[in-house]
Length: 443
Image (cartoon, rainbow, N blue to C red; front, side):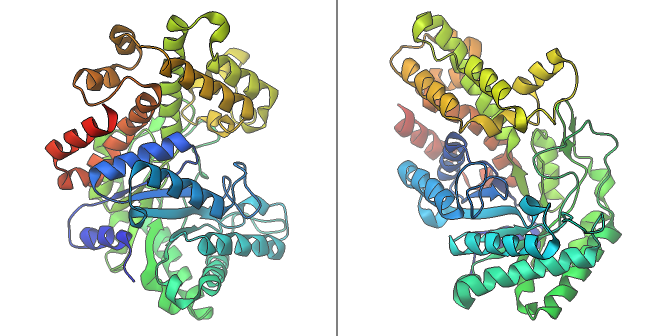
C-alpha cells in the first residue's frame, strides 16, 4: 500500500532532491499554518506528535494519540485540506517517559504507547529506544537499542493487523542531543560517523530477523543521524555539507531509505536546501515554529497596546512571564545565568521553552482576548508595518487581510515557506493560481 512518503524516497533515489517538512508541534495555530501551507503548495502535510506531548496517558498536552489525530483532522477539514493529504507521525516513541523504571517495565509502557499511536491511524513512526532505563548501562549498546525497537514494531504491527500495517512507515536511529534542542550551551558538534550509521542499520536488521519481522524492512523509510545541525539558547550550528561527504553514502545500498534530520530549526534556507540535496529528505522543525508564533503574538500584543485602552488589554507577554515564573519546571533547569539572562531566555531563547506553556488556561485566555480585541479594531497600516513588515507587504498587495489570526498564521508560514522551497514543493506550485487562492482565502 503506497504512502505519500514513498514518492519522496523514490525521487531521492532517482537523483531528484525532494523532501518533506515534518511539523512537530501541538499548537493549533502552528498546525493551521502547516495545513494552509500544504493546501496551497498542493502537497501533503506531515504533523508529528512527540512522546512528551502525546502519549496513552495524555502527555504534557493532555492529549492521547486519538485526541491529537482529531485535532489535526479537524483543522484540516476546517481549512479545506483533504484528509488523504494529512500524514500523522509519532516522534521519539520509546521508553523516554519511563526512564526511571526498570527496562522491562519501561518497555511495556513503550509498547502500549506505540500501539496507541498505530491504532489511532499514525502512519509514520520514529522508534527511539536509545534512552537508558533504571539499571541499564550508559550509553546503551546498539544491539540493545535495536532489540527494543524491534519489540515496538511488533507491538504496532500486531495492534493494527497486516492490512493496516502496510500503511506504516518506520524511522530508526536517533541523534544527540535529545529532542527539542540542546539543554546546554553547545560545544563542538560533529556528524554521525559512517561506521556508526552502518552499525545502526546492521543491528536493526539482525533484530528484525530475530523477531521474525524481516518483511517490515522495506517500510523503514528513514534513518536518523546527526548531520551536525543543532541549536541551543543563543546559537545555531548551521549545516556544512563538506563534513558529511562520507556519511551521505551510507544509504546508497538501501533502496527504500533516506535520512531524517532532527533539530533543523533556524537553519538558513540555503542550509535546508543543501540538506535535502544531500539526502536528508525529512526535515523536522518544532521549536522554530512556536518561536515564530511567539514573535507574531507578541507583535500583535504591541499593536494592541497602541489601540486598546489599558484596562481592556490582554497583556499577553505579562501573563506568559507570570505563569512561567509560577510554574518553572519546564524552563528552570534549562536556562542558566543571572536573573536578567534567564528573563531574556524565557522570552527569546531559540530552545523556546515557552512552547510548553501555551496550553496554560490563563495564557490561553489572554491569547483569546488579544485576538478578540484586535478583531474588533482596525489596525492602521503604518502600525502593522512597524511590527509585522512581511505581513504588511502582503496586506498591501491584497494577499492577506489585516486580521489578527491570519496575521499570526501567516508569520508562522514564513518559516514553512523556506522549508517548502528547500524541499522542492515550489516546483509543483502555480504562482498565479496560489495568488488567487490567497485572495479568496483572506480578502
